[in-house]
Image (cartoon, rainbow, N blue to C red):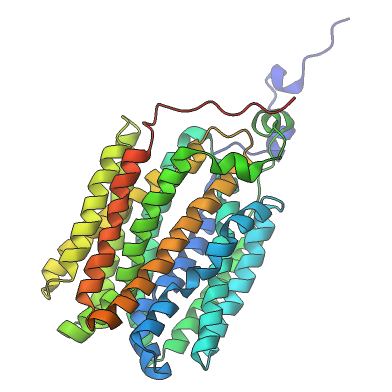
Length: 429
């Protein structure tokens, strides 16, 4: 006797399991992605808006140029030692829980930084805030894998970069206005960001969600054992190429964001409001360039040429920004230099394209990549601050450190063409 066909085959709707596992790329996916992106990028705003706040902080706490450099890099210190271990540990817990806890801690640490009465307390707050910010990133990579199909990863990362330009640019642009409304009190600015993060924490707890794959899909993506996650990830040449490229680019970018407002204020009398707008325009250029790079790479293997061009744009643009006091020229050169930061989705996508045998290796490779970002973000302000003490001026140090962005050209040489991939390891029997 023939059995009746399943409900889905009778044309009466999908099986009930389809409701439990929403389709990749659904509306829910974009809500989760948007919440994670906004939380992550506002955290970066809270780190890199220090350049706008630094003149007030330095006057209040009596900081030397070297101490200013230390403070500018402190948000990434912990990541150098803890970046890869954090990436590995976050694979052991669900993305929603990890991101939720890190947002709670980040909110508290922003209030801590606003309260800090001495340099050491502010330094500790920034260091711990940077660790929390880093810990948000690897779970985000897992969320992208859960909610979006592989062929859309480059597009999603390019949207990430565009959002970076808009949110970072908007945050840097608004910080001087917040500072003015607060009567020049930098502490109040930290409190404002603390309130914003508390609201984001509540939104994430209510709307953040993981996507649990159906058994058939999970078997396709997670059929390998989890042994050797770290060693199996770090042996890939393309991952190291991406790390080298982002290391130098992050050095140049973080140095300019930390010290450019001080340079223009002290040397040219350009207000913090104008310098914030100039930097914001560069960040917007980076977002647009990232979308353009994704468009080109979707049609041909152009990532080597893209990286060469963007390395030259960053190095040349940052050098030119230090040599003029004309606001129109500063806006133009900032936009050109910022367009160079459109490299980020190109290199950030490399971990997603590695021939790995377990999906959690993507989180570990993202953690390694972000550790290299952190290394550059530490070295850039530190080198600039101490070179300023050595040369007794700020322009030459910014030019020297800005040239480190030429590592993007080296990354272009090291990366294999996109079509050349090694085969993923076979899981041991």
